Image 1 (cartoon, helix red, strand yellow):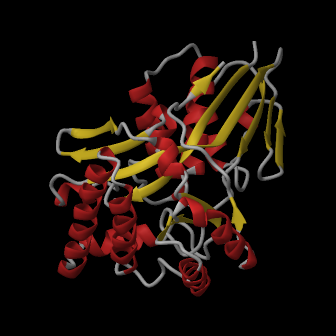
Image 2 (cartoon, helix red, strand yellow):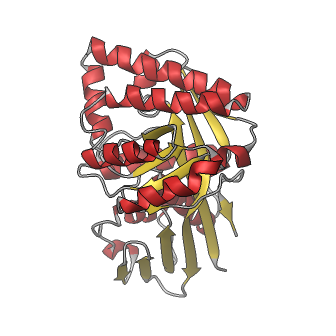
Length: 330
């Protein structure tokens, strides 16, 4: 039986970085706000009658073919896949095909979405050993080991559950709360574009985390500002106050740029300036910054002209819809 899974990526709207354990423990009541989008990570597994393992990564253009799991090495770029295969240790061989619509380094949670889809597929292939809650923990822990730095909590929830979310980061644990909003109205005001792969992807948050743990008081206050903006963003979305959402997106970006000089780039600032001149009212990078995806808040009647000016900067527009559904498997 062929097993297939797909999981959405996400746009983080406010409160990123603070979702990394243990940072949120120092900021009581911290939240992260994000929205699942229909740029999916997909996994297809076809069982074999022998022990051979074939892995194809469509988006990376890579292929691995080994006689058994004992011969499986961490091929460059496929470390997450091979680590998860070793974790589940299936007794039977298979042909695994993966793909992700999110560009590498885009900052919209592509690796985490692929992680969730892989866990779901391999879990079913090995007789459903784990619950969704357990899969989330497994995904987070294995991804941290693969990339060598702590991961945030936020990416796994939209991948699993979809929707627009408040991720509540509390002493008792991390929980997800769905925000009921007019998603089409929010979509009409957002543009997502890929500015290029970050020069030092994945390192910004780690540097910020180390400074925080070391007791940097100025950084603590900056993180408090990020928390307060995220709390206000959650309230504005719940009330469908899209005028306030735009203001808070700018506030989030201003806060985030103060965390590190590596968050933004000259190219990103030029894109934002040009977009604002054509009618955009807010913008911020997704993820850790330094490149990747940029999300812009735009009056619906200005959307086409802003998209055109963005493309003149050699950026790729990523059309999307907010999806109410998370992980899907057949």
